[in-house]
Amino acid sequence: MSAESRFLTLLRLLASDPAAQGLQDDVAVLDVGGARLILTSDTMVEGVHYLPTDPPADIGWKLAAVNLSDLAAKGATPVACLFNYALSGDDSWDAAFLEGLGEALSRHAMPLLGGDTVQMPAGSARSYSLTAIGEARGPVPLRTGAQAGDRLYITGPVGDAGAGLDLLRSDPRASGPLVEAYRRPKPRLAEGALLAPHVHAMMDVSDGLLIDASRMAQASGLAVTIDHIPLSPALEAARGASTAAQIAAAQAGDDYELLFALPPSEKPPVRAIPVGHFSAGSGLSLLIDGAEMPLPARLGWEHG
Image (tube, rainbow, N blue to C red; front, side):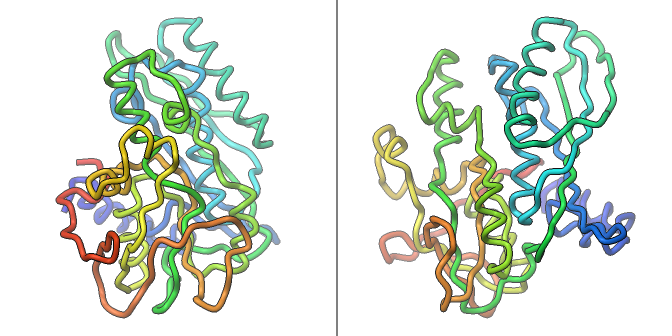
């Protein structure tokens, strides 16, 4: 069990309100009057979630986008957000960060209502957090609802952002679609809204296809088989489509595509790629080109 998992076990003792969903999901679901609010919060830390050489405007964009992606996975419409910021000591850097953040908030109609600022000690890693509030006007698909026999789909390929991060680690001046996927993820709000009334379970892929599919299966009390790992043309051109390249793509994370369980009799109402299925039992199985593969030691991203 990772340090993160051990901490969450203790934290669940405090998060006892039904709205917290037992901390089994990325969001809280809070009924207020006649509205169903979706609450989510993400933190980004320099050297953990992004490279120190990343442009500040892209970091600001990404902070908003990862929260919006959690709203998308519940079919929610953005309502507002709160923002906490550790001042960098560099006014021009801070201004560029806010420019990227503002661009993302404006693009996705999520107004900023408030937050907090703090001055960190010199030399500290930069860190920021954003809490997004959305409203669901229909069913809210959690990650716990998959059923045996459901097909597992994803709204796009995996591995691009992870490959972009690797390129930037080698050359901070790198550019192209893989770098763009890492720096400027696109929250699938429109797709989430269309999918929510139909799916049994849904979440975004932030930590990697393998680990997030495993989490959905575990939360639903099922086993899951991944039988296809979709790669983009850009990734195949850069790394090929070998078994090793496919597994690396499925571990990488930062994809922010929507992963969802759908009854086998239904077709997705959006463009999506079938990647597996659920069955009775527990655990994760991986097939590549029809052959069962041993699972890698690391399924995806975990803290600790």
